[in-house]
Structure formats: structure tokens, C-alpha cells
Image 1 (tube, rainbow, N blue to C red):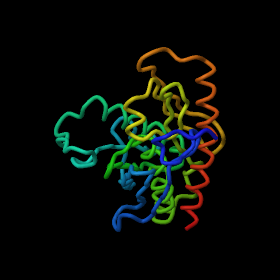
Image 2: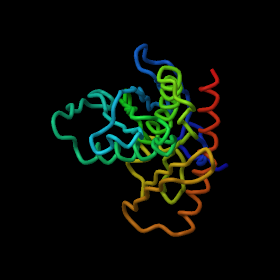
Image 3: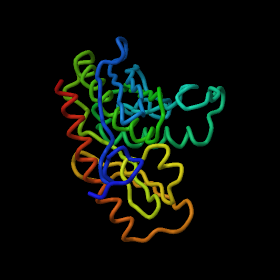
Length: 240
């Protein structure tokens, strides 16, 4: 694998050092801290009785997500978002929620809601993809709690989901970009995939010049391989 200076001896197709620590919160029904390089995200899954009004009476559950970045998650302090959320935060929350709903069969949850909070403790690129990967682990534990406490006939958790960032920097396709790479990338792409092998979301944007179909294919292939590695790490964490 070709090495790039500034990647700390990490190849273009290599993930950053990954760690998933379950049980990070003593009170949440499911939780973990996921670390990908210098990015660290606390993911907590809270079980709540009831569902949104538009879903009441359906007998189905709901999974939703919230995302925030702590004021000193970055090099300089950013203000807390109070009141109306910014457009970027809303877009990230929706992505995380869509991705995590693909993990569960809400039809057998009963009218329960699981809310997954993803709080970025430290940001060095890939916070939304880390939130999805860590959020799925927390969601799995929350579903197990729900089966035990609500006496569901079966576990609504069906399969894990994981996500990874990719990009093109100085003409090179790179996996799992840190902030220094992401901030100078010509192309920024996020890939979300399921344990069953399917892709559920591709978010890709050319920041400067258009990219080719061949480059897109290369990024999807590289990302799909990495998602397989992330899924194995999730399963290992859930066995622990």
C-alpha cells in the first residue's frame, strides 16, 4: 500500500486506530465510547416508553438520534447550540437516525422509542461516521435491555451498521480522513453499510473539481472493505 507523508505511517486504505468501549454510561440502557484516531464520541441509547404522536396506535416503535459537539471538542471553543439547531447538526442527526433505523425491525418493538445521543468529546474528522458505528453498538445493547425488561417475544435488533469517511486529497483516494486531510480534500464522501452486505447511504461531494466514476467506484470498494473491518470490531465489542 502506498504510504503518504502526514498519515503517521498509515496507508491510503488503512483505518485509524479503532477502539470501542461499551458500558461508558452507568445509567443509559446502552452506551459506548468510540475512538477513531483522535476522534472520540460518546454514544448513549435511552429507552423511552411511548412513540411520537404520528406513530401512536400503530404498535410500532421508533429509533431516532441526536448529535452534538462539545465546546472544546476542537482546537478552539465553539458555542453550544441552544434553541434552533444549525443546518449541519440537523443533517448529521438525520443521517445517523436513518442509518440506525436500518438496524432494527420497529414492527416488533412495541410502542417504545430508543433515542441515541452522539456527543463528540474530541473531533479530528469523521465524527458522523464514528457516531453511526458507535451508535449501532449502543443501540444493540438498548434493544437487549428492552427484550429483557419489556418481555418482547424477540429481539428487534436485526443487523449492525457501520460507516466510514473517504476522500480524494492531492489526487489520492484516502480512507478514514482526519481533519487535516478532510479540510483540504477535493472530494468528501461518507459510506454507510449493513452487516448483511448492502449499502444504505452514499454521501459524496466534489469540493473543487468533479470526480470520475472510476474514482467513485474505487472509494466505494475501499470503503466497503473498511466497513467489513468495522463490523468485525463491533461484533468483538458486543461479545466482550
